[in-house]
Length: 115
Length: 113
Image (tube, rainbow over the protein chains, first blue to last red):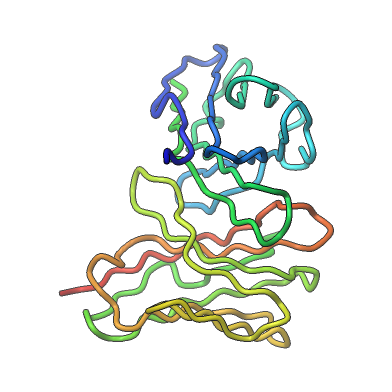
């Protein structure tokens, strides 16, 4: 009964490189959310996806960031040409359904450091 | 513009006493509220939630109170235990915004033995 899995747990990238963060939702969950937590701040919503569909990307920066949740495989958050300000903890959450009574369960996060 | 605020960055409580964590919000469209607990290097763990049609929800040692007129909610932990030491986040969602959660900045609770 595995929970939400994220890998890698730690990722170091130089400025200008690409970062790929993976998220496997809990078994039976088809809704995935990505949040970002900057140091000493709360989590900020980035994007909400269902299989093969982006439902809400209102929290995604307009450039360099993209997300997908393919029919098979994990959800991917991709950051192109990373900058120092992208250094943060990125959390993925999943839920069974999109209804309000379905709590979001979080993964352990990926800590991205841009040098 | 922070829509969910936790004004106390930290709180220290003696073991066995009550811990009260507070949260204020500004968006009157929020209709569902949650509390998450987070240990270092881990993801947030869901604790308890409350719908705006209620003013109290209880689960074991945890009780959440909602005061809609004041746009304020609080989490009570009784009795507090050392294992409760963590960062607590308040979160909210609104009916027409899907499942996007808006988080407060967190309160670090330290329960002293």
